[in-house]
Amino acid sequence: MKNARKSWTIAALALSGALVPAAADEVKDGEALAERLCVKCHVVSQTVGPPFADIAKDPHASAGFLRDFLRSTHSDVSHPNAMPNPSLSQREIDALAAYIASLHHAE
Image 1 (cartoon, rainbow, N blue to C red):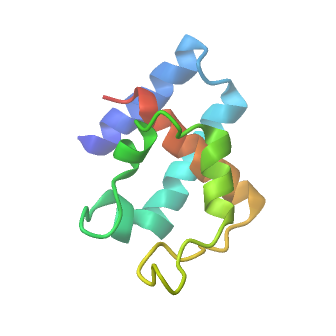
Image 2 (image 1 turned 90 degrees about the vertical axis):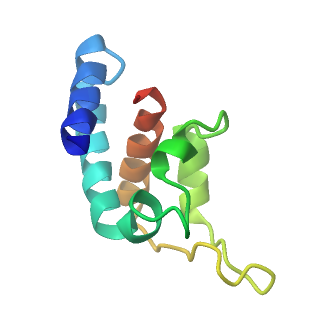
């Protein structure tokens, strides 16, 4: 049911003109990456990292902000358990940022 709702949301955004076809493809690619790379901490478990839907609702969570965040290292001596640098390609960063930003409009 949850996957059907996500797919419906992406389709609705694409049909409404909120996403151009290329952006809709990028969102789908980002969703696939999230399910493969990020699910352990962000999609299933709230004990490690916040769910992407919660991140997307932050007023600062624009696609540009998310791209910058995904490019940087987050753990250091003072925050050893913070998110590690995921070492993503620019295409993967763009796709994940588009996917997370698309969740801002999801219910």
